[in-house]
Image 1 (cartoon, rainbow, N blue to C red):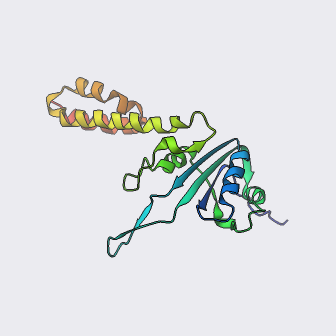
Image 2 (tube, one colour):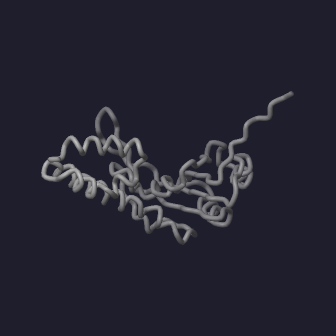
Image 3 (cartoon, rainbow, N blue to C red):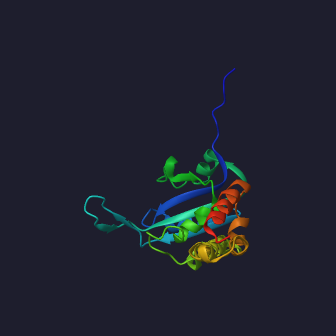
Amino acid sequence: MKERPKKTQSRVWGLILPKDAPQCNEILEFCKKLPKHYYIMLHDQDYQIDEETGETTPKNAHYHVLMRFSNSRDLSTVQGYFKEFEFLRPNSYEKVLNLHGSVRYLAHVDNPEKFQYDKKNIDTNDPLYLDYFKNAQSADNEIDAMKQTIQNLDKMTFSEAVESARPFLQSMNSYQRFIVLRSIKTETKG
């Protein structure tokens, strides 16, 4: 029995499109009509660093496009949608495994070494897309609280330290909590 070739499927597909690509505006408009939700961001301030000289040079302006469909689509199906745009190559499309992280990447919020784009400039039809950016702020608050707790461990009782670290501990699994609590116990005054 002959095995069928494995299909590459995903509900979310990405596309990087050079700003100066032929029919760029037509493709972007097409990307807005095709999926359930789209997310488009122009990266025109990106740069690359030469590892030998440390010199920075600007990258060519390009659009990052994310398309979230209501159900899973095969790569060949997605490629077929764009068949009239002949210059797009088969490797122009990327299966997106993590929509949350990919939307955040559009603004580089988790990449402080890269140019920081304003998340409000993301062109999207998803009214809740700003929710993708809320977790970072609360995670930053948790990290700050944990840092404060660690700096004051020698002045706190074990109970005070655990209470201070409660939000951070709640995001951990049981094993991680055990390790952290054991460390707190050895560092507190009792």
